[in-house]
Image (cartoon, rainbow, N blue to C red; front, side):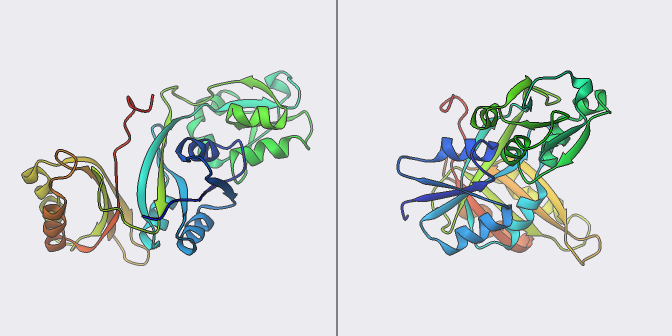
Length: 277
């Protein structure tokens, strides 16, 4: 596989995606921020020596469906995963009381993960922006009645003052990031698939039965409506192979017989928290 020379991520330096990219990148790998998830996918499709890192799901707010939708249509594949502990910090140019904050900038996903804080402070109007690091950068040009929520690293980059850390509803807050590239890896102990089913009774049960028969660990199943096709769904599945490798050919053969439009979204190694702690 061609050596990766560049990794694309969402936003600018100081974002959570930048942090994930920094953890995943090796020496001499260029990190490049882009404005949207779609732009990351398109850029990776054009460059064989590039990869993109994207948030796929959060332990509090669940899946980021835009990524699943883009994976479905993309010519890229998942090649790795990593987990990043998230710390949503409220920051200002100058510290003031909470009662003086009228507006707060951040990414919409951040506001979803911090529902309790904003419910307890209803006078603060949430203002969605492209990413958390951009919110911190914008804050430098705004008045004292505006704050933002971002990674603490963004405060250091932009010379901001942290008012409060860990705004998230639960401190056990992790985001799962995936790396995408142009080539499907031939090795790895974790697989991601996408498929749809005939609209008949028992079709989902039959599609999932081979996992039990082969003793495979099904770690996730997600469904998404198919645009323009009423009450039809795409299914996304993650599973782990036996002993790291056994079962791939068997499950793919079985799924081709039981599903429609089967697509392997990626093959990669399961993230090891202990190894990476």
